[in-house]
Image 1 (cartoon, rainbow, N blue to C red):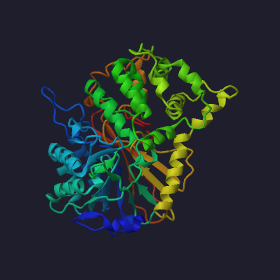
Image 2: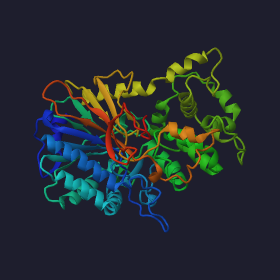
Image 3: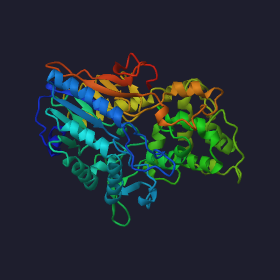
Image 4: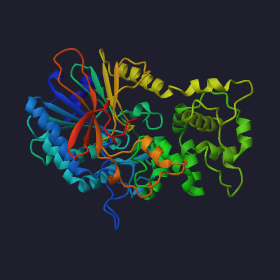
Length: 497
């Protein structure tokens, strides 16, 4: 679909899409993850709730709005996906997995979104009132966690909530991307370049189940959240408030029960899931390496646990070495490749066939993420008929990065906006880890204890040439005052990917 044409089909409240792109101040945020679970007895917040920062959001909106108004700039605030947390819910049974490749229906997703809107009326009011000011506009893109915004019911429900605010100029996107008028800057959530979280039929990610009910596609990443993080987050509230979920999962591996480990292994390998999901997992890492599958199977389940955490002492399985022997070559290649990616400069944990040069195996995985991103952006530019793309802005990873290296793509600048929520860096977690055990205090650390720092990308108006998006932090300084700083300055406590 040509994006220039598709923009005309967006639902707009209180305004139109016709504008001169170079006159606008553009601010991109993502990954707020507003949740819909009320707190349980004795709790202030549900363990699933990642966005607890109404006052911080209000200060940020006032900051960017005042800056635009003083300079007489029209302003676009683009929320680039995962504004809402529609995967995690205490009512997980409301989206029964009759087919492992499918998730919520339109009506089920609408119910989840309505619960979120009811719990976050204050945040919706802040955003709506911001968008109602002269020259202000709010653009909401879908991500992988709130892909349901592409369905009619959830979109209508969200638009209805904003319609209650007179004059609110709000766009709820219907094709997963936002492009400025001169075609030089593309904004997306970014999950479609991630094999674990992509949707095969994007931007229409739904299919009919065996009963004829239209349901959203369910990528492997959703199973990872449901099977692993849903259980862990009740014990470790900040488990998904990090820049590296894999590092945290490794630390916690030794703290979970045997049944949780088994369930996690099955999820990580896509066992029992769809062929599409298994292929996506295999494409993450590990294909093309000459693994010795017979030797891997002979090593049994202890090798499986070593792959998950090389420092952990493998438990004794209750029924012998059975799991490893049931895995396909593709399953084992995916797991061995994932382990190699974590330590590409070390000899591989899995044995390789005789005669293979282990020192060269790291070349297979080093830079694989950059290659996937480059291939995706090349396809995306072609699909959208972009004639002069320059900048690509995305979120998804929660890792604020202003220079993505080694990407061979039509875009000359690729920048990540991080997350507009409180997250902790991998470096800080490692500092807390000490001897390699789970980080001290992780079990009692709440999101409120994390640094008061949020990341975003801003692009100033430009009269000619190309856009120049810059990564910024919105944070409190040592005196407790709000301040905007660059990615390069990296204020104390602010995470970076």
